[in-house]
Length: 165
Length: 198
Image (tube, rainbow over all chains, first blue to last red; front, top):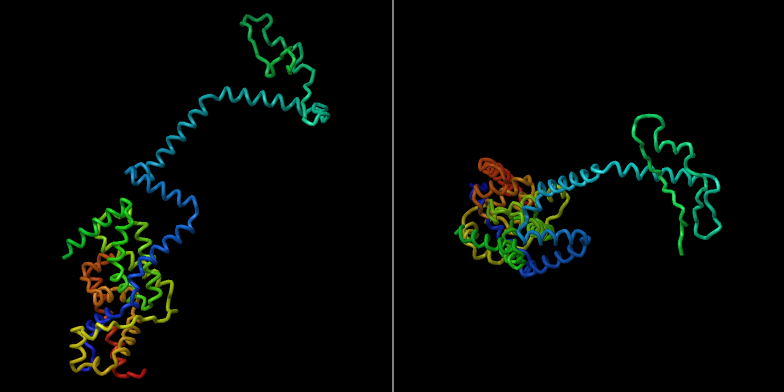
């Protein structure tokens, strides 16, 4: 008889509803919520704020489907494929460019090829030809029946003055 | 009774999703007292409850764009509150102090309170404030999950089905947790009746 039964325990627990926070707590809760939101916003890095605002903007435009992860991944893959196609479409031109650069650097590495006489380092080109006169025979074949084959020098030869003022 | 509440919440949620922060303020004002009771009775600490409740609404505001209305806003916000509180209690462990709110004076007019104190029962013999303290201590001896069920069912008056949705467990699990928790509370309070000084 003197033991707590289920109903009494249930009633006691229901009476816990009368445990209430200090007066005015619920009225101030919303102000406190706004204050904490502002503080949190100030603590966020700029990039995150920009990201959130962009996301909100896209959401308002109802283009959330375009910003989904699968769509974004697909877009990145398509862009990567297009860029790789563009790169591999012109390998010849890239090779020529690399070869001519190596020839230039080979000549520049020689002794006495650079002078410090001027505040601005100027390159003194060697007067020696890049290839011997006998090698000019490569422009055509002797005695064979094959048609002549012309090969362009990697460094163009010019008889004009380098600088004109 | 439930339908208008859901409709009104849906409208407020839709307005919040379209950028009306004032609509979310209305949801905060509406649900603060109820969620306060839920979190407070799980933590038995006013300061922790205040911090948790702020975090709950902050999280809800950030996540509300992703809310698609598969459940009611009521269930959704309660799920956030319960999960965050359970996570908090796991981190807090046993190191805490009770920081209880005062019993409101309106209890003197509560019909159940009057009936309970009028009949010949152990409640009548005990000092009410002491009994409240003992009841809170007994509550804190329950596991976090059992306390959550007791709070939602006995204190908040939620039906089993709603509790099962919030906790994402079956109704059978809710009932068995309630049964076990009631036995535990009964044992603790009987000890108090037999040995009130301890």
